Length: 253
Image (cartoon, rainbow, N blue to C red):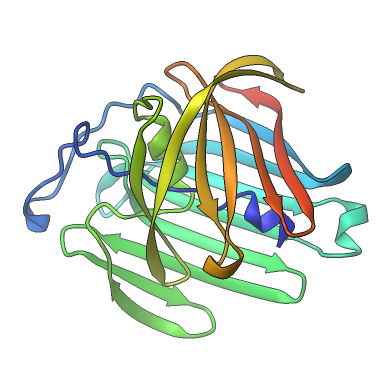
């Protein structure tokens, strides 16, 4: 659960900056992306208090097509280290296929192994219909209603990197995972310089709630204060201390 909490990402709907179709069937929006490109690889160390827990890698692996649409193939891989695996072993791989023009997911693949829990499913998003088709290894096929341009928890993170972030703004957000979506709010708090293993960075700090409603905590994320919006630090207080993810290295920037 500690490692999982660090990678619940979010999406933002900014009506003043994103032109969305009034009719879902008309499709698609265009969003300029100056933040990331194929070959980008971000490696994070994950820790609980002063204990090293594992690593996470976010990578823009290549471009491909889904439903005849060109998209970015992006992965998020989290692994607990040898010590932490004796307590709670994590081997997760999430994949998202993000429309290169509109910055929304066309497909989301989740393969998780956390302690004794395993979950494997594929979601195909049909934004023109407001539907998501879910193929779950255990429960089979289902279809649910979703908002147009809904994001999964990984595509959401890359989408926010393409957006302007004005200090003081509170922005409505919605993410889809495990067969349902939820709304929340992300706050743009302040600008701050921070030093991590990968270097010293001028950042914008944003905050969003994570976790189940009854046990919700705030996740603070430091994004570089430039067009790339690279995440360099993530921190959250939980019931038993605090967790953090710190950028160790970056490639393809």
